[in-house]
Structures are given as structure tokens and as C-alpha cells.
Amino acid sequence: SQQGEEDPQALSIQEGENATMNCSYKTSINNLQWYRQNSGRGLVHLILIRSNEREKHSGRLRVTLDTSKKSSSLLITASRAADTASYFCATGDNNNDMRFGAGTRLTVKP
Amino acid sequence: EPEVTQTPSHQVTQMGQEVILRCVPISNHLYFYWYRQILGQKVEFLVSFYNNEISEKSEIFDDQFSVERPDGSNFTLKIRSTKLEDSAMYFCASSEAGADSPLHFGNGTRLTVT
Image (cartoon, rainbow over all chains, first blue to last red; front, side, top):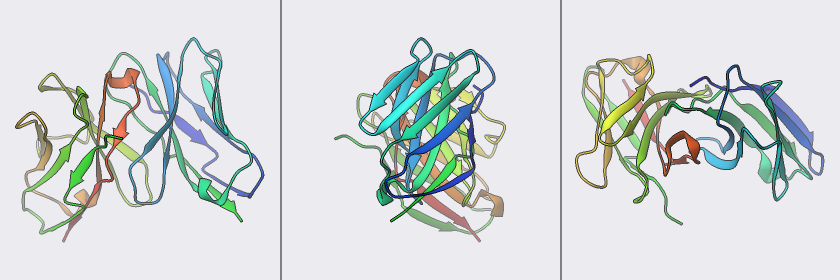
């Protein structure tokens, strides 16, 4: 599988603001997944969006997928200091090797 | 909630020694993975395993690496002769339906090669 490429590499915002992270990929996919990693810990799955879906919500998270542009975005609304983490995307296709990009490091200042 | 467990949490070894990193995936999951992350860098795919055999492996997963599911619960990664550059966090993950479902990660083993 290809890896997702997250953008920006780093993002710093104030508590209460929204954070938007983007992911781009190159070839066709079955799904795209977003994960979060707190420093030194394992990745935690956030959302899976399938190739025939355009938008998905989970609490304060909103994910969009544009297969024509081969891109996805993750929006975190009303951010909190506890949202400080690295965020990764990965694409799922017919191969069994989910690959991650370098991630976006989000810092939410109290 | 079921979780993936990894042992040990920290392993220190000398260059050239063999290490075995252990993982207990979630019990009803069928797909297993190893990833590594050098400090501050990206999470790199090493290998995936399904139906008692490797299904995919990356260019990093050379002859020094091997995986095994020795019994119904454990999934291990062996590095035969460690190098300094093998120092990293190693994460195990499992999923119900491969890349078509969420991966559940353990909290990793920090491997330090001296």
C-alpha cells in the first residue's frame, strides 16, 4: 500500500480553536483511516472513512474524503489541551500493509 | 475493552545479540502487524501476518527479522543480530479484517541497542 502524507508537519493553536490537518495519497483506496499518538505511546484509531463516503463525524472530529483530489482532512473542533498529540493518516487497499506518513504534530495551548 | 499487550516495555541489548519482542493481540483478531518508530520519526511498516504466514513486508524487513505465532495467543518479532540502528520503539497491532478495519496498537517495546 501507499502511505498517506500529512500536512502541515506541525500546528500550534489556542484552546478552543479548530484544528485542521490534511492527508494526501496517490492511488485508489478502499478506505482512509486517521490515528492519534500521544508521545511514546501506541497509535489509537480515530475514524475510518470508506472510499464511497464523503464525510464522517465522531464527537468533535470531522473527516472528509475527496477521492477525485486524493485527499482527506481531519477537523478537530473546540480543541482542548488534551488534544495535543501527533495525528496520522493511513490508506487501506487490497494489500495488507497499512502505511503511515510522518504525521502532523498538534500542540494546543491552554 | 480488549487491548494489545506487548512485553517487555523496554529491552536493552548489545549489538549482535538476538532479541525477541512479544505481543498478545486481541483474541478474535486475525491480522497482525509490526511497526517501528525511531524517536521522533514516522511510524514505519515492517510486516503483516495472516493465516500463519507473512502477507506483506517492507524493505526494512530483511533476513535479520522474522515473525512467528508460536501458539494461539502470542505473536513475536525476532531480530537475529541487532545493530545500533535497530534502536527504536516497536509496535505490534492487530485487526479483525486487515486493512479494511481499524488497527489496534499495543504501547510498544522500546529497544535500545548498545
